[in-house]
Length: 100
Ligand SMILES: [Zn+2]
Image (cartoon, rainbow, N blue to C red; front, side):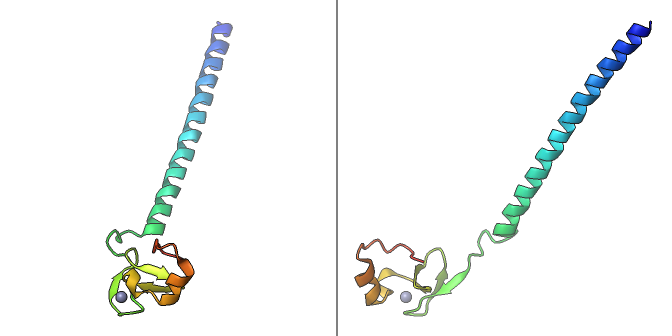
């Protein structure tokens, strides 16, 4: 009888250990998910799917979303033809991509 009780205790102990391990893993997983979610909302903001920062063209003064603007030397331009001549002389590749 005592042997059965010991066996039962061992089985229960193993079950308890496995469950504790699974719970710890689940808690860690949830914490990581929460952290990633908060990072996402912190980086993008809760309601700015459309609220892109607006910039002004340094040449003609028109306002446009930053994603559509061409950045050059800290200024923004609405189109490549509005970039100063020195940008073309400097770049020369004609890509017109945003430069830092
Ligand atoms: Zn412009």
